[in-house]
Amino acid sequence: MADLSGPRPCNTRLENSRLSKTGSPDAATRGAPNARRGKPGAAGKCAVGTGVGKLGVIKKRRDFLALRSAAKAHSPGFLMAARRNPDNAPDEARLGLTVTKKLGGAVSRNRIRRRLRAAAREVFPAFAAPGVDYVLIARPPALRRDYRSLLDDMERALLRLGPALK
Image 1 (cartoon, rainbow, N blue to C red):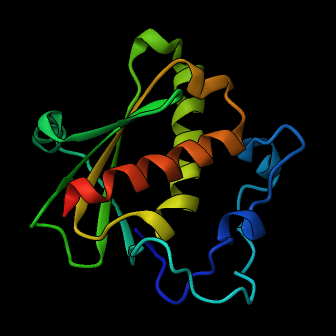
Image 2 (cartoon, rainbow, N blue to C red):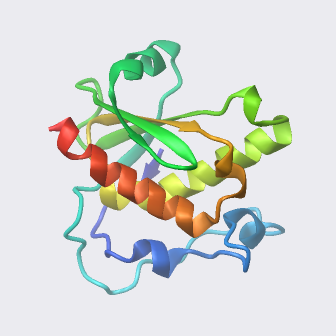
């Protein structure tokens, strides 16, 4: 679990992204397995979203099944489901990923997982609600969609789900 405490600037995504010319986080860190994102700039505190201190992982089947009847937001690359979970720590949001075999072979599915995880690491600290479980169900465009568009879709989905979680 990553500790993301401290003030977050509104444009963290833009300042810290180390993307290749294709817009993929994979190519930017290829050859440098321990490459880290830069420190946030001095852009001030972000007024949008509550943000989370920690981003946990959903691993148990029952937690995934609990989100089947949750609030959902659709986007071209994924479907996001969210549900408040009282068992979470007050400053923690949890993320689960579902990438089915319909989307391709193991290489394609793993690449989709990496792209969605990287996007979540950039967007969730500023826009996710603490104490909530989120599941991303990948769709075929998640593999080829421009990375910046994927980030915008995720941000938009989190903002759409915000009022449904209160």
